[in-house]
Image (cartoon, rainbow, N blue to C red):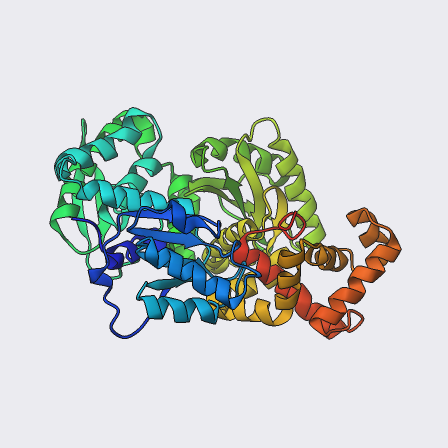
Length: 512
């Protein structure tokens, strides 16, 4: 039996894309069978479909088309037996064009607006897993679970990869805790959050109890099968690291609990740090740094290099892995001026050069004066790393203050509101660049980045100043603004940042 459209939209990657089904009140998602998920930007794609597909598109091939052409596009998809059309909002279109909506309603083809950018390949992979589970000749559940959870152990991919595999199978987050209940590792796969009940199983090693695996979801036969086999796989993985490596170091345990928000008070943190052999000096601020690590490199491999680099600049530190990041708690100064923080972390980052393969951005939270604020600083610095990824920063040192606007946008704006703001501020410019293959977005971005200096902007773009003047005049006409107005320029600068976060694209290369 083929999966239904409702089941497909419930897959983790589809849910992460914030889907909105646009259709009449009689649309029944359970009555739509899906044979495959496919992505394409080709306008004439209908002739290549076999029927039963959910078609994913950013709308690139539809931009600039007339109403009649958009209507014909939907009619051709319906004639080909397309199960549903899913259009990503925010790149080519800021809302689903009315001709597409009307044609989809007329032909009875489900239309889905995707409000958050999620790589289409993840959606296709999730559907592939779902389709394989539905095949009559697919391995029995228990056999397939064994194959999935043992693969990371056999291939030496590490504990996080093992928990990620279990999370994909169970459809919920998965945790490993030690015998004291301290969080050791948590899956990082995007799955629906569940604040209710959970199921767990003991992990037993050669020397006795080694902890528990916890599935953060409602009990079911499927999760029971995953849990039973995961407990054995985790024991095998722990057995790969005999001796002291079975349990995290005291420093690692502190970092893990800080990242999880599991340290209740400043007194508790002080005791934990003392047990780890590290206590801050009164009157000096604390610095919390986080190193973003390439997902292909286990984060724990960067713990020692980062510890050595930070120790050389700041003295003894507490360092541990937290997911795909390495977090360090450092002793700062009585006056932690931003330029001093930046220079110190830059020296540490440079020292990682030969020993820090896989190191990306080294981020720093705002310095704190009290142990009670360290937990919030850890949360902030991890947020800074995530925002840095979203705006395209992949290397170097970044302070929290450097990404103030992107962090504010990430914290206080929904995907729909962000898309509306970008459309309001930059819509005509984006439409012009896509239709005419022009460089106006790139020009505006460079103009803002170079503090409105026309000479430096022209040099950065590699054009004559007369050409720059013509482009700036066209930008002003299209947007109806004056680039000499500080308020309007500020709005455009924020909109450029929001567009970067929304699409993950760099204006300097997006329209090449």
